[in-house]
Image: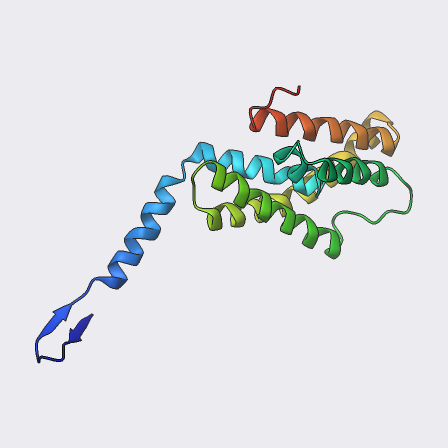
Length: 167
């Protein structure tokens, strides 16, 4: 880009090139291990929308109670499927927020973390829904018990990914 100065001289700038280099540098800084942890923790939101934030902030009793309440309500008959539109939107938002927080804690690009988190939560909602149904069908386990197994698996996954000593 060429700029014309008031005194009649011109100067060139590398604004476009600098932005491209900055974005490329930010993406390279996000190592594959960090992306995997961001995706893994955010995927928990696909199973339980409030569990991922509760695992990120274990000292927050409100989030812990919300996660416990969601786990309980999930076992009740008549509750809508997580793969319905409203459930997917909420889980994707929770995954995006979770991904951004994990990215920030790992000193990575928060926008990339939010994008990865939303995608991971969205995909995980489908995967965990169908795995739970298949698990119940193959083992003959009641849906509430299959949901309890799912809850324990998600808590363990989050604890491992966040290097937590609670398991």
